[in-house]
Length: 414
Image 1 (spheres, rainbow, N blue to C red):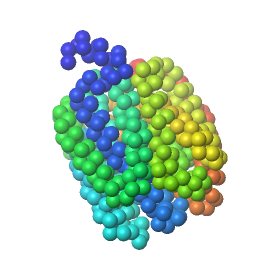
Image 2: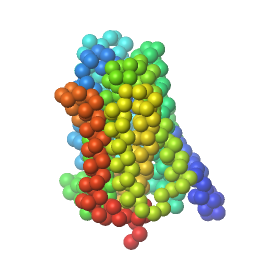
Image 3: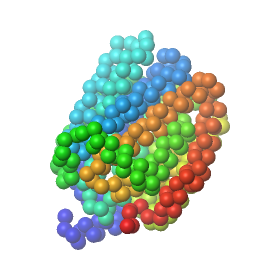
C-alpha cells in the first residue's frame, strides 16, 4: 500500500482492515473466540444441569485460569523468542484437540464433570500461549498511526463473537450438545487455517536464550511503568470482584426462568453493548483525558453489574448486561492501547503474558469468586457485592495511581 493510501486509510473507521494480514488475524481471532463462547455456554449449562451446584460453575473458571498463572513466566518469553503467528497456530491446534475430547465425553454420556474439567484445563493451557502471542502480534501487522483503530477492532473480534457465539451456543445446545461441540471443532479448524495464511510479520524477537532473568523482564517493566501497572491492575480487581458471567446459568434457569436459548441471549447481551461501543470508539476515538475516562467507565461497569444482580425482569437484565459490555469495552480499548503503545516490541510478549494472567485472574478467577460466594451467601448478594466492589475499586485506583488518573493520551508523549 502506498504512503498516500495509508494516510487515507488511517482516517477511516475501517483503517486497520486495509491491511490483509490484519483482516486474516481478526477473522482467526473471531473464529477462535466464537468457539470458546459456544463452549462456555454449552459447558456451563451442561455442568449446572448435571450437578445443580454453583460451585462447579466457579471451578470451570478456575481450571482455565490456573494454566495462565502457572505458565506466565514461559508463555511470554516463547512469544518473544519464537514467531507469534506460529505460537498462535500451535495453541489453536491444542484447543481443537481439547474441544474434540469434550465432544467425545459428551457423546458417551456424562456422569461426572471431571472429564470436562480436564479438557477445559487443556484449553486453558492453549489459551495461556495463545493470548500473549495474539495480543503482541497486532502491532506488527499495521502501522502505528492506525494501531488504536486496530485495537478497537481487535477487541471487537471478541465482542462480535460474544454476541453470536452465546446465542449460537444456546440454540445448538438446545438441539443437541454434540452438535454444539462439533461446531466448536469446525470453528477452531477454520481459525487455524486463517492463522497459517497470515504473512510472517517483522518482529523484534528476543534473540538470546530464555534465561531465568529474561522471563521476569515483563514483570519488571510493568512494575516500573505506573500507568500500565495501574491500568491492568484496575481491570484485574474490578472484574475479579464484579464479574457475574459465571452465574448466568443460575439466572437463566432459576431467577429469570429461561431455557438454554435464554442463557445464550443473556451471554450475548454484553457483546451487543460492547460492539456498539467499539464502533463508536472506532469512529470517535478517545483523544484526551484517557485515564479519567477509564476510571469513570470502570465505575459504570460496577453500577450496571449491581443493577443486573437485583433485577428479576428479563428486559431490564438484558439492558443492564448490554451496558456492562459497553462500559467494559471502553476500559478494554484504553487499557490495551496503553499497554501495546507504551511497551517496547522486544518485551511485548512477556508483558502481554503478565497481562493475560491479570485478565485470567479477573475473568476465570472472578468466575470462581462468584461461584464460591453464590454457594455460601446466595447468587444475588454475590453479584450485587461484586458491582459495589468494582465501583470502590475505581475510586481507590484514582487515589493510588495518580499517573493513570492524569494520563491524557493513549500514546506515550515523552
